[in-house]
Length: 297
Ligand SMILES: Cc1cc2nc3c(=O)[nH]c(=O)nc-3n(C[C@H](O)[C@H](O)[C@H](O)COP(=O)(O)OP(=O)(O)OC[C@H]3O[C@@H](n4cnc5c(N)ncnc54)[C@H](O)[C@@H]3O)c2cc1C
Image 1 (cartoon, rainbow, N blue to C red):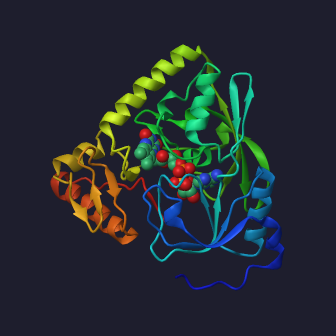
Image 2: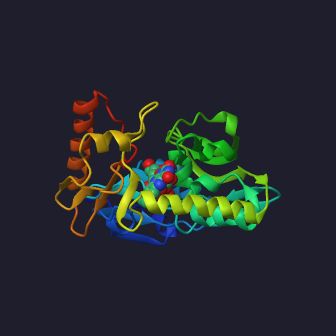
Image 3: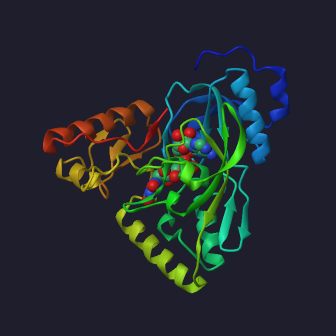
């Protein structure tokens, strides 16, 4: 159990719903992680911004949590606030663009694009998580990241008023939205007119491929490591003999060597130790240092 902070200032009562000591294992796709001291679920972007400002002013540490599909939370839990974006799930159609609140799920957004015959998000088919998390991670595939279709993002920043900023103001990298301390409150995705049928055919083909090559029915957080330039982390891990290797109740998927999968009873420590083993094996086998994609809290 983490050490308690001083009691939450009374002013935070207005930011309900608030849960205390909320187990993060419930909210992460690896199903591991101890309690979040304070767990907030704001319902509108302006409530999220006000909460962030209040936490910042009170010097209370906070973390954003979307679908928890790329986070490894510690067994001891985290002090301070975790802000879950799950209640911020609205999407608005604006011509060929989708304006999303950060908790819109990636799949809800992909479906909204298909349903309106809009092309541009197909490569996110089957990717779990929220749009805010996708932006923070620049989620996508080998040569696509969600930032490729971002036109504008409204962000909260510690020192500034929250405002809409153009894509050109950001510097996203491969699997890293590079947001720094900024928190996305609203995201405008610019897509292209296509037809519902064409978009759906592409999406379904991609989903079939994922279902065949990834352990989608098991608890995981997707790829644990980024692909090194011109290489595939999964191939390197496979060649280094890591498929099926386990630590405690965490193991390397036998289907895809870059996926760590967990069973009930797994701990964050199991996953961390396994990640170290995986990286060491590739360093020894190929002399390549793998960089983690999974965000370790
Ligand atoms: C089966 C499976 C398949 C996957 N396939 C892919 C894939 O093909 N491609 C891919 O890129 N990823 C993939 N992933 C990983 C994951 O789905 C993506 O990284 C996704 O974007 C994570 O979104 P999330 O909302 O779950 O983020 P979280 O895991 O909740 O958070 C990730 C990071 O984003 C930060 N964050 C969350 N919301 C905000 C916000 N509003 N503002 C600022 N920061 C924020 C968090 O603090 C954290 O640092 C896969 C995962 C699984 C389990």
